[in-house]
Image 1 (cartoon, rainbow, N blue to C red):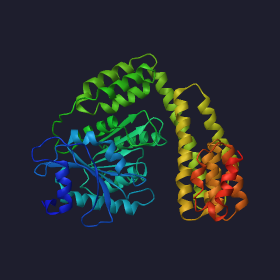
Image 2: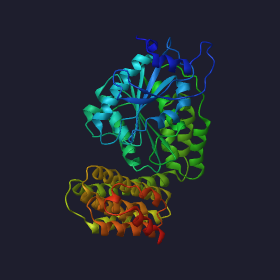
Image 3: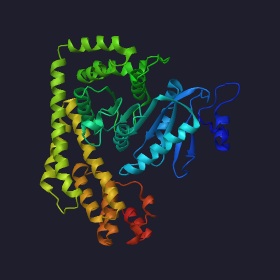
Image 4: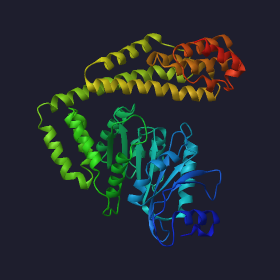
Length: 447
């Protein structure tokens, strides 16, 4: 194994992280460039007891917005506990699968030069679009021994590719727009006889909290081909949250979480007891039926949205106002119901519509297809009518088309709706093509 001690850059980094006396160092992550390709750079964190004479696993992150430093900072304590070198790509992003693939390969090869790798612990984790790419890469490269997909599932449903993934863990928040998708993924993987685990948490579409990520890592460590005992302690805070679900009457959610946690050896007996207790409660059956009914309604709404949305993405000049109004009204009705599960489904459905519009709006703005961007922003208004940022989107898209009148119109609507960051607009290159900074200032001062 090559020693990067031959490189001055690594020597400086190594001396910063590890002392000859073995004393604990301040936690620190660094930004580095790949030795073989300096255009590829990533955030890296070495665990406290890092030593090139010992083997360490690696956990590589793919963020949808090229913010690889975010998960690296978030999971440093887990790196210390499980002896993992963390590496987060600063180039991987949504809608750039080839870039993400090249970034992973570059980082993986670079880490082989920096550490003495435990080749049984090569984990790849992604969030949102990064989760989809991570699963695709794991199917292509058997070197990846485990995936942790945060907030999204697979790019497609090709079973032959999915079967190539060695171990698959996922995390999802209860208010994540992709919640239903990941629940369905678990059923699919179970049917395929594949090892998998889904860790739930109380959150939105985001990188999993450290406690939830810990459960996923622990399961991967136990499920790999040559598992070894781990020295970490059970996460009492995570268990407390599961008990709180039961105490608050969310019986199905508690049962669901315990059913997954049962796969981790240190929680197996506790989980089995909790599952048995929950299934014996008088209200469990009714609660589960309510949960499944809500999920079915949510799935129907999201599918209807996707079907109506596809022609717009294809560039067709179609705006089915009736369909958008019907879907928005259905979601609004769900949100007003007393059922906790129906309210959750409404929150996720709204988030699905908002994020679907947001991602593609910015993509079409980047490609200067402003007319398509306007149609997408118009659709988003049906689902989040009180969000002033949408009016700013419309103003910018019309500015791209050179339409000053409509640009001013939507800026005025944004000001009236309470947009609070007008200073950000004074240097907006797109807006300044059709109006001046003084005109923007006047719009907001008048409000």
